[in-house]
Structures are given as structure tokens and as C-alpha cells.
Image (cartoon, rainbow, N blue to C red):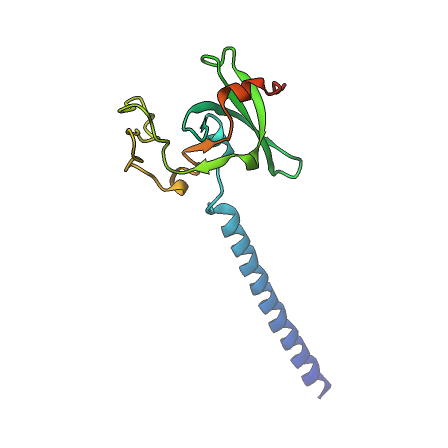
Amino acid sequence: MVSKYIGAALLATALMTSAASAQNAAQKADANVSATTHKDGEWRASKLVGLNVYNQANEKIGDINEVILDKSGKVAKVILGVGGFLGMGEHDVAVPFDKLKWMNEPARSTTASNSTAPADKPATTTGAASSNTRNANEKWYPDHAVYNATKEQLKEMPQFKY
């Protein structure tokens, strides 16, 4: 009779262990899926470098040269390169990441056509937004950023030293 109780206890323990094991496996699978798939609002930092930055008047004021992380891995600031030509004479300034407004649609151009647009960035037209908009998740990065400053104001900011 005691052996029946021991047998029942062993069977119950085995069932609970396998159920818990299955639950842990399911949780690990869910964690792996979320860790290995792209989510809305996640961008590749490598694709942010080189991104054009415009002001609210739709004037190009620079581009992103670097993305700076804090020790927890959160983006703290970006380094904007302002002025210069092909990197020569460029003035690097640090701006808080949260002060940039990220845009998925191409910037409106004041020129009739931008035939030299890279293949991954659509050409723009005068006045209206381009009909060649893309899904923000398609490339894992926004089209451009907007920062509330003029090129002259950025040049007056302290130079960021690496």
C-alpha cells in the first residue's frame, strides 16, 4: 500500500517536472524569437551613421558621424558633422539623441529633381512629398533626422573631441 503512494508521488512529480520543463522551454523559445527578430522602432546604429540631418526649414545642416551609447547600452547622443567638404574642415558637435526627430519619408527638396539619390533613398521632388516612400522597417533605419538649429548655430557649439 505504501508502494502505491510512493508510485503515485513519483508519477505526480514526473508529470509536474515535465510540465514545468515544457513551460520553461516555451518561455526560452519566446525569448529567442523576440531576441532574434526585428521589432518596430528598432534601428541599426550602423545605418544611422551617415544619415542626413535637416533643420525645420528643410535645410541640410549636417549628417550623423557617430552614435554614442551610455554604459547601459542606451543611446545618449549622436555626433553631427557640420560643414566641411568630404570630411575636411568638418565641425563635430554632440546633440542629445532625444532632441532629434526621426523621419521615415524622404526630405522635401527645393530642387526639381535629385537624380544622384542613392539606390536605397528615393529621389525627391519640388513641393510635394515623394510617392516613393518606403516602410521604415524595410531598411531598419529612418530616412533622415530633423534637429531644431541652423548650420551656423551648430558651428558655434563646442567641438566634440574623440
